[in-house]
Image 1 (cartoon, rainbow, N blue to C red):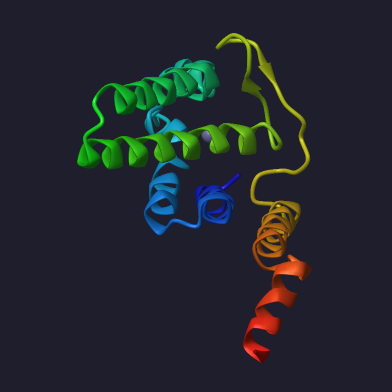
Image 2: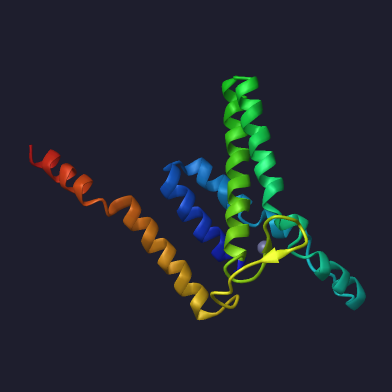
Length: 163
Ligand SMILES: [Zn+2]
């Protein structure tokens, strides 16, 4: 998936789930983190294949991000200081963004799940294909429906307006 699409999909999911602009911004930053830590592919051919072998291994290993999230949440419990708690929440959502990136990579390629070097995935579409954009639009529509499609809630708003 293209970086911009990682950011759009992750942004919509986190915004829908949290309804918080700062957490969403954090997740959007984290949405490209697993690729960023790998650095850009080297131009030199032998260096490229060395880089390629490590591509989507440790950087895309979900357990690392889960452990970091647990550490941030533990630190929050241990030092209940509001500013620190807020910063730790921002870090947590950046890591959630990274986890969503890995899940998104897992549907257009392969990513590690249990160990860093064994990868799994289902290839629903090719990166940059029209199917990718279709998928992105679908996620946006699902998020919008989840956020605004609650008919009962909508009706209660209307009732409230009428009173
Ligand atoms: Zn990736």
